[in-house]
Each structure stands twice: as structure tokens, then as C-alpha cells.
Image (cartoon, rainbow, N blue to C red; front, side, top):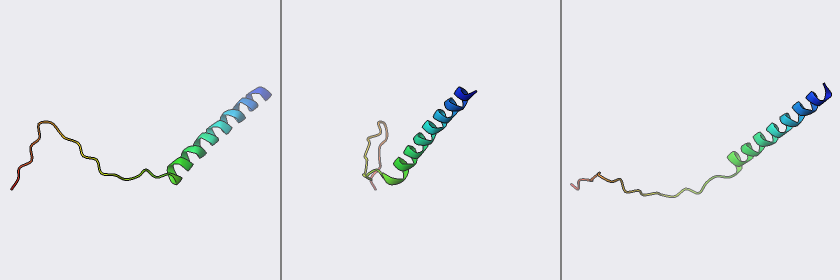
Length: 48
């Protein structure tokens, strides 16, 4: 039984560290905004 508790504790601690790391990455680091232009084949834009 003690090995089960140790295993659950380690798995819970790793899950907590992973969740905390994802939260920090999601809240502290924002990507730089930039305009992206892609050519879509087969689409023509009519000029008025």
C-alpha cells in the first residue's frame, strides 16, 4: 500500500508541475502579432 501512495503522489506532483508550466506559458508569453498573406490558388479578386 505505501508504494501505491508514493506512486500516486509522484504522478500527482508531475501532473501539477505540468499544469503549472502550461499556465505560465499561456499567461506570461504572448506571441508577436504579424500580418500573414497567403495566395489562394484559383481565387481571383475583381477590381472595381
